[in-house]
Length: 114
Length: 115
Image (cartoon, rainbow over all chains, first blue to last red; front, side):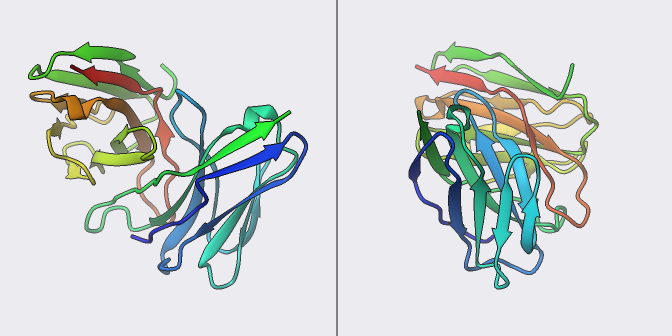
């Protein structure tokens, strides 16, 4: 299972674009890159997933370079309510082969200030 | 019920007592998971179940057991609770695996304190 490395914390101001980069040097061919968001006292919530290039949804964009050894979650024009922990996961799509394990890690704590 | 529910919301338990955390989902997801979250450590997988009738061990399974008698329910049991099991416990579920990494849907969590 590929290990991920992301910053422990980041600060931003309302209205700014925030980019959180995750390193996953040992990503495997079958692995997808997934980001979750967790607010205090709540369970994580899926934000976005990608395999390569760029993926965009109503919440965020995910940029993945050609070598897939890193990925960047981009949050446009953050607000105070975007203050949360963001987790980068690199997952094996072979769900039923040899057991499936999910490693969330400590994530990146984003603080959005007024 | 919509999504995943967990019970109880919180519990204070004496060490040595037996405790079962309940988890129910109504999305007909095949896969279910139990995580614990400790301050500063993110989430760690305790046990998982790919489908009803099967279970598997995650990163930190010791001291915990699970069962999956049907699709909807996935209880987590602490046979003899210890203070190190004080944590927030999250249950999650996802659709049956296909060719993609499956999105997991999380419950609201159970805050357990073992004294």
